[in-house]
Image (cartoon, rainbow, N blue to C red; front, side, top):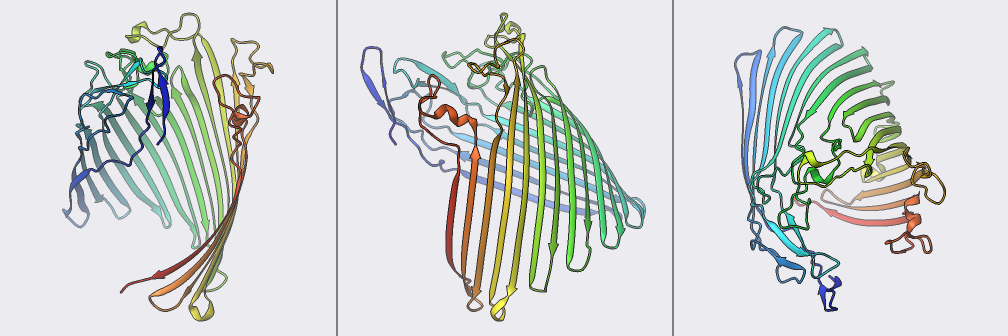
Length: 486
């Protein structure tokens, strides 16, 4: 595909070609083994083993003007995957079942690591460097659980889970450095679940769990994209300020509650109500501080005949998260050759994100028409999603003014989606049938982000494309012939 021209300071230019290709060929060999053994009628052991070897050795694309030097002609990639699981169950009493299980999964990337040189996009004289990081990980999981029947229709389950994750690079072109800022996490989780068959046609369930996640931190790690202007990259901590930890790896406490009830009101009508709430607290000076998620779902299904049914649902979901971040000021630095040389920022700003989602839908199906040969179905749904940002910058008193507007509340980002699906199939004989379908979809959204792309309103270094927030209507008609071979 076409690229862009890059020019040296003297005026000479080289046309830079962009190459896009599919994923290279690879080879995978895997061996699996499973088995089980019954020590007695009450005690059973089951498990499995797996070993896989994945290789890829296609030549790199060469001869392109932007490539300065490649240390090897191909990646010579190799990844080894190992899995093992074991579970022991024991019927301790008539009402109690005990279980213990362990799982082990490892993905070891044995591909070599090198520094690759290439010209910067804006200059034929500036050389940048990038190192590939053969990322590996290992996950070990342990579960101890007990299920106890309290009485007729009542069951209680207690469970403890432990998870340990390790991350590393077998080889790394940046000598003596760790390729990951967060090389590992461990998590302890304790949960209780209660199930009740209140009536013959009413089932209730509720559960609560508490988990605490710990994490390792390596501030002197040099990640692959740090310090790209040098043949010896030395910028530590992923160019982040000290105190920042990405929330998927940060230490965290979580409280989770789930509950639901199902009512088989009649032989034809089934109703269900489910809810979920989670609260997360993160132990990080900078980054996500806390988060809350909640959802409620109500659904109903009615079989008005042996061949026909109709179903409907309503759902609501909400998410909030609080973020704390820093900006340069008072000597703060986020680029240094050692973690000890970094200085944490004192200019602290905060941000809150809120997401709301509402959806409603109805679908129906009827079969057995025209002597059992025709089946028709329909589905209609509507959803409304809304996002709201609020940012506070206490060290900048004028940030909320109309001329600056770098803090305060932004307009809501909204997206409305209507979908209609109709389909019908007619069976000609036992082996063939025709199907017709119609799909209509309409999306309407507004997002202030696109204001900066409008002519006359673009900030510096932004091209005015006049691009609008995505809004569209789509109509699709399908016709299909299906034949089943005996």
